[in-house]
Image 1 (tube, one colour):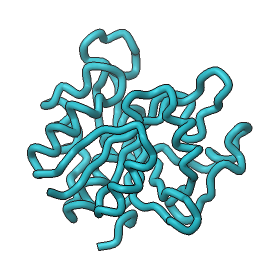
Image 2: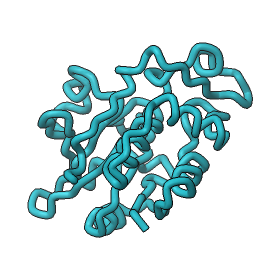
Image 3: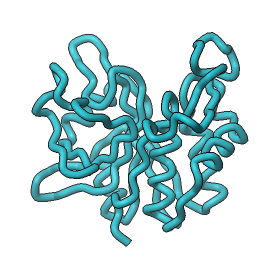
Amino acid sequence: MSYGTYYLNQNRFPQVPYLTDAAAKTVAGCYDTGTVESSGCGLCSSGMMLHDLLGIDVPMEQLVAYSYHAKANLYPGTSLVPYAQLLCRKYDIKFSQSNKESDIIETIRQGGVCIANVGGDYKGHIGVFSHGGHYIYIYAYNEASGEFAVLDPSRKEGKYEEEGRKGKVRCQGDTVYCTADILKDDTANRDPGYFLFLRK
């Protein structure tokens, strides 16, 4: 099976409810009218991970239900640690966390994949993949070019042409290619920056 052929974009799911910020209920649009389109990058990234590692296509509604069951929706968006732990128990996948790009490469060499936790804009940095918190899916690494292959759940036309982003990634089909330096800068304000998944 070839990785990276199954692409979930959250913008294609405006009709699927996904209520987050369930604990504090302070962010309107999350806890009351939230959808996968507005908050589903973690769900989409996880769905792509399950497809590539196990060959299964989990319906979006089921991915939402898993988040509720894991209480991964208590804050705006998806808390990936409890969410990933639930998925990995259910589907018998090995899960670990890291802040090192070298660990992504080693995981991919072993047949695994990564969900990166990009943090958006911060002082001196314009987020390449997001201006706020976001999850992206990394499924391959090219040793020769030094590029990671990324599927971005919030990709839309013109996203990488914005000021501060232009020229930092290379797009081909649904895939966005970037170097380790781009990932390092985009996850510098997140801990952990990388969630790693392997078949047991």
